[in-house]
Length: 243
Image (cartoon, rainbow, N blue to C red):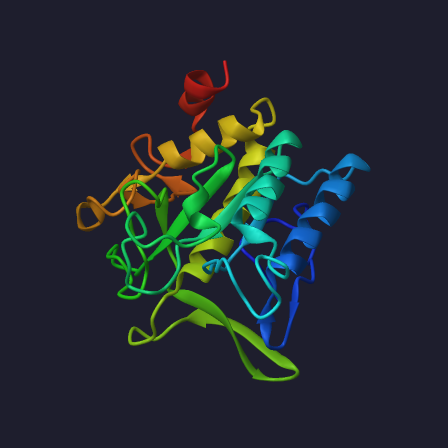
């Protein structure tokens, strides 16, 4: 299948669940594995975390015995920061303002995180996408997909307009753009890359009061918007954030 990034950018799939869903314990172990890979010399710049949920103090295994508690997951994300790795996470698809109704890992608000909402092709918030001017960083257009006709026939097409974009798609898109940004701006560190991506958004009036940066992530744009603007590298971003 064809993605949105050049082949020089590689995806490392990490198993952190099973057919019934994800487990917080497995997620923490997966993060440990990612950190080990980074320490071994693999150039991991970001992880895609297109999921979310809540924590319960008590469960059938006893107090935090299985999930390990939200503080333990936060510690793992902070360990990613110590190893210069961004995590890109979905705002969620519950129609909620997550400034009020917390969702993890989106609600941690750590320096190395980017929280992504989903927008439609015409720049409006996707109906189910969560939002929050304090908790969501930015939106990405997620109204396209890879569709499977049969086991041997993959093709890329636009989603029909009635199909709904979700934040998992949007999060994966931003993760890909982070990879591209690391190629385009090799002199910038991981936190500078985050700032560059957030500041290169296209403002959208329909997203006002929906995110910290009320607009759409742009890889390519015009008039100073996008990592590539008017067909050339947006060097103003380097001058502003990486020097």
